[in-house]
Every structure is written in structure tokens, then in C-alpha cells.
Image 1 (cartoon, helix red, strand yellow):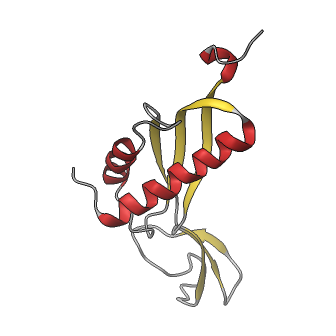
Image 2: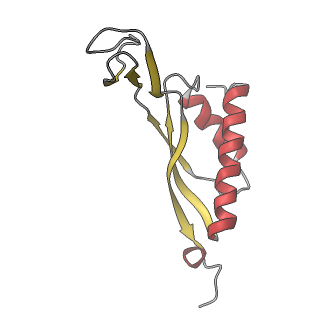
Image 3: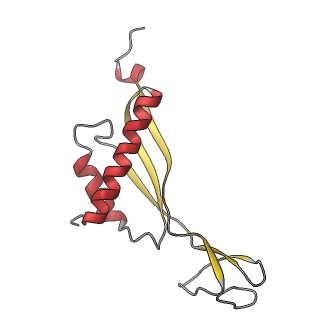
Length: 127
């Protein structure tokens, strides 16, 4: 899969976030990163992983496994205040069928978790 420009941009932002965390927390490298992607984000998970692997070479995230998790579409009805999941892209309240809703989740791209290797594990800290 060839990564699109959108996925490359997101991969760069993700790598920047991981590098910022490395500076703030002083770890050797990122082993695994979990990213939650909403179905309305416009991101192709396979293309994002491909772009990330390409640009992570020579960084703290080289060899990092990028785990992609799909987020659920969630909304709140403005008519009856019901909270519900949107299924099959039917943007209507489960209770009253109103289409006057507020999207609460489903367009996000979130770094939800990361597993790192400490400097000690890498042998970079004196005992």
C-alpha cells in the first residue's frame, strides 16, 4: 500500500509526538504505539502504518509496531439528550430518530498508549 500525503503528514505528527515524549521522559526507544483512528478521520490505517515505518527510520521509533485501533462513532441527540453509537453511518438518534445530533467521537486520531524501552534496558545508563 502506498501512503498518501495525508497519512504521511499524520505519521510525521505522530513521530514528532513520540520524539517529544522521548525528550520529556528520557527513554531509549518506542517499541509499540497504539493509535485510535475514527472512521470519519479520513485516515487509512494500512497507509498510515506504511508511512510511519518509512519515516521512523533512524529515530526513537525505528522498528516500533504501530497498532491501529478503530474508534466508534458516538453522538448525542440535541432533541432528547440520548447518547448513542452511530451504526452503519445512520446519523439519527436511536431513541427519537432525530437527525439533530452532536458528534462526540469518531473523527479523532489519538495516540492512546505507547510501550517504551528504558535507557537501562538499552544499556545506555551507567549502573
